[in-house]
Image 1: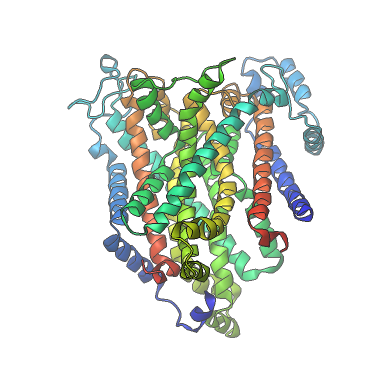
Image 2: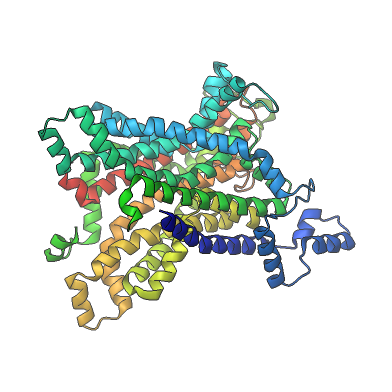
Length: 313
Length: 297
């Protein structure tokens, strides 16, 4: 298992390097001079030159890339030109909020997705199956902000059950959870839709296997066959899918945070976009990349736990 | 899965296969029929936008701001007194053009690279597969956000960003069947006859994997439209006052407490198109996937 984990970790390095190159290239092909863009048209040439020096833009491209790489390796992701704070401290301040949302949505996805998918498979082509299939397709088609807005209108604005804007600052745990309900459903519904579909097709495949028939034939009760034999095998592809879509989840958290005005990495990105805070944008993208690679790594490891066959492959 | 196929005759002509699959799913599967009808309706609306719009989408009527739906303004007006129905109809053009062109480009480049990768094998395959895996690690929204944030929001940049995010999907979907086809007798025969690799890839492999690529295309067109709307909602869409669905929702969101029709109607428009495309893609995939047929669908 340790060897397997180490191997996966090694594979992540080229990905990370490639992404760093991509982010670096993207930030350098902005049309025009970034210093000029940041300061605006009215800036004096001296101010532009000073900022260029501060951003390291007066060095050669190769040196700039080296600086960037060394910085990232030392955990220095840049400094905001608006607030003067480092990207790491900015991100650290809001990371718990984003993680809280992501984990809650993942739970929503699993809690709804796995049972619905299994149920749908067992009632194949009957009413529950058709309803679940249509439901999951709708869930898949709803952009996070569309569903978020619809939920907000119905449950926060019309019914007033949940706060319209997430409370900021120190609030009780109950208030915090109440504010988390709508955002995590918004984000979780996408996950639930994916998980339902994969669980269904994986379950259908497993239910047709010989060992299921054998278990039935030797008199194991149906619900036990489902729980101990079918579901346990059907869950393996689900783990892969959860991992694949963790990235999608992190991406869509940007939209969810915007709709519910929650603090988080997404809000940080949108703020940096509005203020043309390029160093923050660049730093956050590297950070997002790290998060996604980390998520993929965790998936690979979880896959090894759920499917012992992989560990020895 | 390959073994019995190797003995069979080369498959039916690809267009006939796709047409047959479309027809079969549309008649057997109500969801696909509804999807095709809904998507065609949106295309007709977008193409004939000047005919279907009741107002000029940019015309501001400051005396009729935030009007709720009425016989004169079918879906009401926005904060500038612009007619929402007309803006949705014109907005469909942006969504469809960006989605279709981006997915079209990704389809051509992606399936080209995928076939090349699968047919050539060796280091070509290694290099292309590695690059694909790296791009696949990125959710399309984040990749799109990165590219557009730095290049600036314009139609060509949005198309480039969405294409980049979509290309690896087509590489993957084209590569796998190419590897399976490479060993088939009729491809071996082509090689024995001395056909050039380019001719084999274009004339003999491409036609056989075309339907799968088109299924992927319809599913990713749905994603492309969703990503474009999401970027517009974040503020990285085509610049106002050009009507885009995501941009309209963004503007409508500011009035959410008082006039929620502003955000609701463009939201429904996005839902209809994306759902329709997903229904078509889903139905087609089931029809083309031999495993689904065997299991007695």
